[in-house]
Length: 333
Ligand SMILES: Nc1ncnc2c1ncn2[C@@H]1O[C@H](COP(=O)(O)OP(=O)(O)O)[C@@H](O)[C@H]1O
Ligand SMILES: [Mg+2]
Image 1 (spheres, helix red, strand yellow):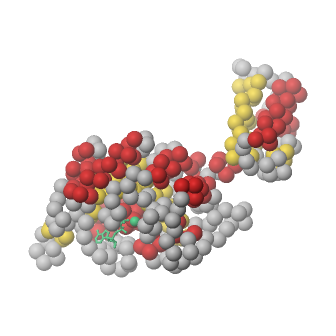
Image 2 (cartoon, protein in one colour):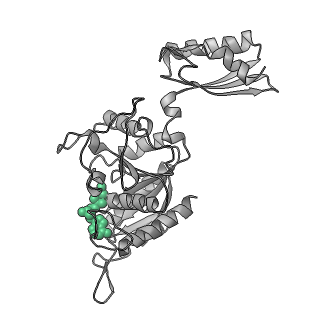
Image 3 (tube, helix red, strand yellow):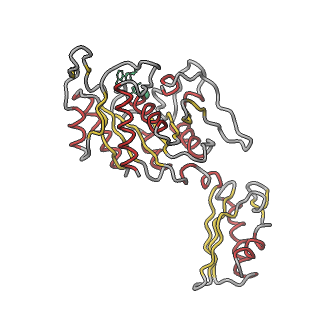
C-alpha cells in the first residue's frame, strides 16, 4: 500500500465545514506510513476545526485506514487551513520592537530597521501592532486606504519602499482614534498573521508593538512560536527604568532579547563634530546590563533629510541603521 493509494481512498471524503471534498480544497497536507508499527500518519487541513464536523471526519478517516485498508492505527492531525498556511508556519524571522514608554522612537526604529533590511536585499513585512499609537503609516507617508481583498478572500498588505505593510490604522475610520477592546484586539492580531496574504518570500517580519507590558505582548506569544525582541530606550533614566520592565516581560513570555537600542542617544554637533549628550548618558547600557544583553545601536538625534521618518544612506543615521541591520542579520542567521 502506497501513500498515493491511501490518498485515493480518502480524498473523496467531505469536509463539512466547507462542504467540499478533501481533494477539492487540497486538504491532505501529509500522508506518511510507519511500516514498523503499520500506522498511517495524516495531516488534514479543514475550514474549521472542532465540533461534530471534525469528529465525523475523524471517524470516517479511521474507518477507511483501519477497516478498509487494514492498518493497525492512524495518527491524525486535523488543523485549520488558514493556520497551516499562515506566515507563522513559514521560515520567517519575527522581530518585535518593544519599549517601556511611548515617544522613545520605537516606531521610527521599526520602520528604519525594516527599510535597512530591505536595502540589504531582504524581503520584509512591517506590522504596525501599536494599537494605542499607530504611526507606521505616517512615518512612511502612506495615505489612508482600506486594504483590498485577494481573490481567495485574504487581506492584501500595502507596499511602500519595497516593504509590505499592515497597520491597525488601515482598519480604522479616518481621523478617529480606535479603542480596541480585548476580543477585538485579539482577532485583529490573528488577522494580521492568519488572514493577510503576505508575500511568499518574506524573510523578516518586524513588529511595532505597543509600549509597555500590556495585553498585546501576550497575544503575540500565542500566535508567533518564536520571536526575537529589540528593546528601544532613550538615555533618560526614567525611560530606561520602564524599558527594563518591558524587557523582563518579554523574557517571561519566552522571547529572546536581541539587544537594546538607545535612541536619541546624542546630538552630533555639526560644527565641532563632538557628541552632545543632551539627555544624559548610560540609559541603554543600564538596560542592557539588567537584561543581560548588549547595546546594539546608539542612534543620534537628527531629522531625516529626504523623508518624514526614514533615513537614507547618505545620512549618518541611515548608515547607523544599516550597521544595525547587518548586525541583526548576523545575530539571527
Ligand atoms: N533619532 C531621532 N532623532 C530625532 N527625532 C526622532 C528620533 N527618533 C524618533 N524621533 C521623533 O520622535 C517622535 C517619536 O517617535 P516615534 O517613533 O513615533 O516613537 P514611539 O513609537 O516610541 O512612540 C517622532 O516625532 C519621531 O520623528
Ligand atoms: Mg509608535
